[in-house]
Image 1 (cartoon, helix red, strand yellow):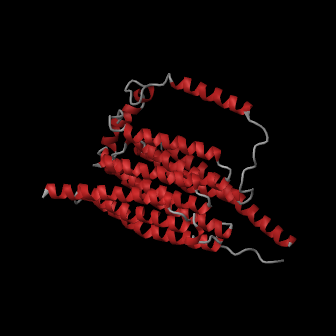
Image 2 (cartoon, rainbow over the protein chains, first blue to last red; image 1 turned 180 degrees about the horizontal axis):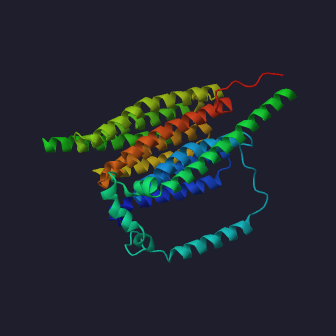
Image 3 (cartoon, chains in turn orange, green, brown; image 1 turned 90 degrees about the horizontal axis):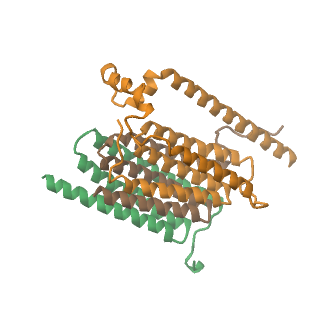
Length: 191
Length: 104
Length: 92
């Protein structure tokens, strides 16, 4: 079910991507960490809209729920344990900038070899996707092939992913709550 | 009948977009946090409401209209609640409202 | 017609983003985040109609819920310093 970008799509995709870049630049330049966390929430909303335009509603669901809802909240809880403003940089980070630029250039160079968006000859489309697409209509009543693959044909993978994310969430919550309460008690004992 | 619905939906969509932009401009230009909430409120109620009504007129009587109206109803309930919580939180945080003699 | 609405919603999102970047106080930024979420809901609805696939409205409903919960959680965190309902432990 691939859809090549039509002529009307670019009027939505290009402004969305421009907004993404503006948000990313603003996040980098922000000194207040709480503002950066909230802008990360905005970034997640934009990414989810963009994934929706790429015909991936399941990924967009996950991005919205995790990025805009959960991740913002957890980062704010972490901010309660550290300072609310970033310290000013001590020296110019030329070394990390060089590493980042080289890595980014290598990644972009790697994407030049990728198949075109929606190419029917891509390796991902030749095996085993056609069999999934053909069997979905016959075996299930659901119209969305991606959902059928996630929930039915590759159900064990989804079970593993859900377990991992659930464990990670519980671990983070236990860490944050336990530490916050101990820090609160210690401050009360001091005063 | 078709053209009446089409014209009505077009009118609702354009008016809704105009209100959304007006709310956005208000968010930028108004002087204080408490006044900027009015801008947000305009986009959430009039802007979203008119756009959703326009879209549901386009869709006719179907499941899509039910979903759109469900989103609208939830938005109309949640948005004033969030606005009230925001204003109350700002007030208990000590944020003072803007007065005319502040001259900002 | 949908294109006009889409452009308007995108412009409003840009304006909200500007307020989130500028806003001198934290509450301006929370307000901008809230408005951005509702605009995303509108954008999904309009783009769904524009591309002829209005099945994405479930996603828009989820975003509306997430936006509301996120805003309330941020405010609760600002006010209390934590997210839970339990009372603080007693003095020993």
